[in-house]
Image 1 (tube, one colour):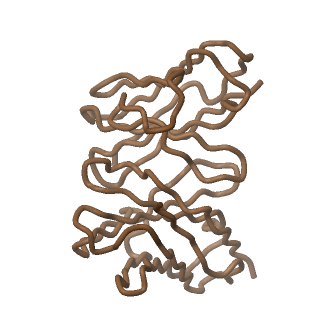
Image 2 (tube, chains in turn red, green):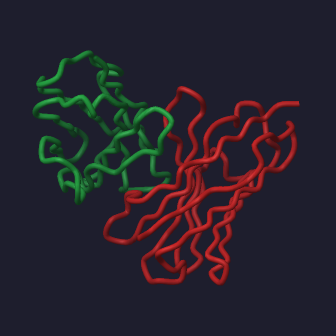
Length: 120
Length: 106
């Protein structure tokens, strides 16, 4: 059974850097075709795709956030880490990580999400 | 970026109704479209992939169709557990953009 779980700070101050960790189980981050993505959702608003990392360490980012995002993975620890610099109150919301694989491409399994509030 | 536009933004319906949600892409995306259902306080759940392929465990009252730029999600007979917000997402190119959502309410 594939599961993902996000963790990280609940409260971040403006200008700080956010670091979120997605811990996965039921699959390996090194299995061919596997990818893990990050998606966020401001309160009461739509989903926004942020970034994805593939089994071969290929990485893609949202163009609008490209300069602020970094995604990495630690296969031995079954973790994917997303960092977002220069946090702003508009970055407040729920952040999800999710699994996909080549041939599916959509996110077929999601974590429960973690809420991040940006406030001084 | 490919823009995804859903309509309507919200729809009021009753149990047993047939509900159709439309998603339009700003450029052709072949059949590379997914539909998700999200209930309040929960993560989205993948319903349909590649426009019309129902995910395992998803009730057959859900169906999807379309290709190119125009897509639809249909719920043939609305059930109480179907009241939720639905999102489309294109998986043709990066960034993988979502629609703004359609809320199905009583």
